[in-house]
Image 1 (cartoon, rainbow, N blue to C red):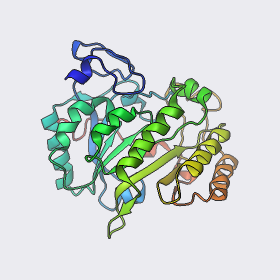
Image 2: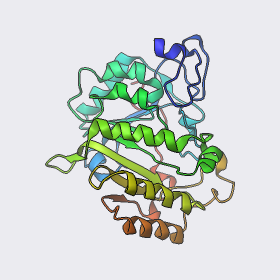
Image 3: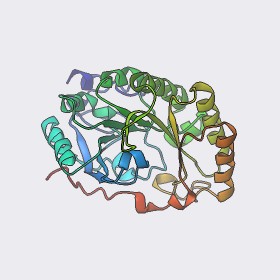
Length: 297
């Protein structure tokens, strides 16, 4: 596909020819590569519900955080190549299994191949779960096809973004991307069962030793989005993983004092519309097994 020949799908705009075997930052070629497709019960309650989200984990990543819990697929590129037609079959199978929605995890570096699998429109909401480091122009191709966006807003500090994700431009890029997401979805809408069927939920993961970064992220959300525009999901599930797992302060979980400092700031800013994750969630039991379940059979 032409978009892969001089790839500029993410803010890194590597410009490589993925159809000729060249690899940019994401490490992926021009065929969809995925590592797991199954019912997923560990998202926010109105996403997982009682039957689970129909979640497809795509391999590779334009961000490549050095502490990623999914580093086997995001940094190491584990996965199997599948066709667009096979991806549509996977969506349908997950829906047949009772999935409340179809959740695409880190999909945007494969969008030219994924878009045809989203048409005709699926009978359940489509969720785009991503790291926030996205091209607003690329996201425009999803307008009308994605119902719910679930982006991270990881950093407000460029030095931290550079050190941990090699993306010093993370904050302006993510802010522009999230603005585009909100433009597409509008405010959050729930169905009669309390399931999220439209809207944008901004996730922020508290990182050990970096409380000030979290406070700045919350400041931005409070100042930029009128109440009711987005929901905020504050996460405390960080566990040491990836190349940073032995490097202080990333070699530990978030302390109770750090967690409470961020939560107190959240309440002071009147950002309680959304979700709070307790520090007890800091366990690797929530990391799925990437064993190609649902991908090849």
